[in-house]
Image 1 (cartoon, rainbow, N blue to C red):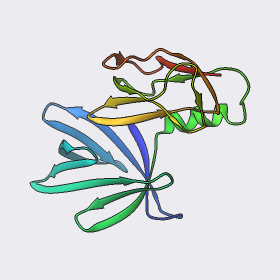
Image 2 (tube, rainbow, N blue to C red):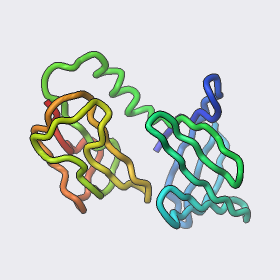
Image 3 (tube, rainbow, N blue to C red):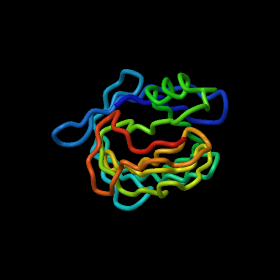
Length: 168
């Protein structure tokens, strides 16, 4: 999986993060530099990392508009971008007409369905929660409309591109 991460307020430098599962943890490449990481999620919004024998606890704090990460007592504003989802958002920008399929962006497992069929939703409202690599990802509606179909069921495995729901 590849992500672009910007740390700090506007004007922060973007970093490329590549994650690959290894036998005993994760191989992480940050701007081309490889780091072996052992990671566990001891509780919601907390990530415990072991890097070169040093332990770090990272806490996630998210509001409606901002994402912050706490490393010890230091707080960092963070923007996380998935280049695949950025491309798909750019392709569909401005195209509000007709039904929109909400697709699984990654392989994982459906944890929760947040809305019922035939319910009205706002653009950006959560529809389904998919767990991938022990992280829960809220998949959001691309537009304001009515949920015409929910294909996702809690506990079901999904692959990238699987239709989770349709918003019209």
